[in-house]
Amino acid sequence: MSENQKDGGQMITSDDILSLNFYNYGNPFTGSYQGMRYRIIKQKEAKDEEGNILKEEGLLAVIWPEPFAYEKTQDALKTTQLFPFSEEGKAQVIEWLNASWEEGIYKNETI
Image (tube, rainbow, N blue to C red; front, side, top):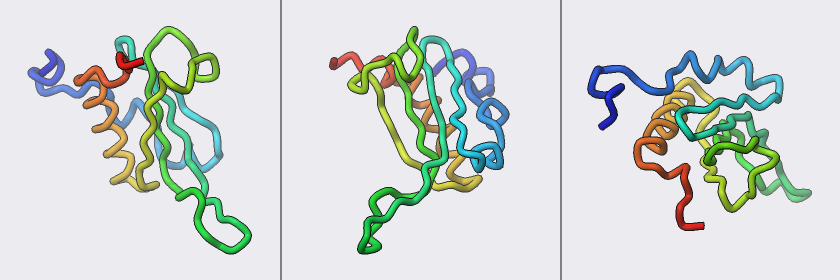
């Protein structure tokens, strides 16, 4: 458990990743926390010609190790997770980001 969590604080908070309305405009939000970078964007639902869902709508969160920007980081170093596009989903993103930092998942040391 980190010092932040021992003190009852949370490392990345709801205020850090902005409101859901921000994501409706289609722009990604990026941030970082002590060696871990993250990117969040609203993924729109995509269907094929037959109406089959290819991509579900949701908050798509990606983490990777510093120092590089998202576009300059190899895909193999990125870990991605999709969450519901809702306040509950936003809370799940925050929980996942904090857990990923705590567990060192963003370091992707298997690469």
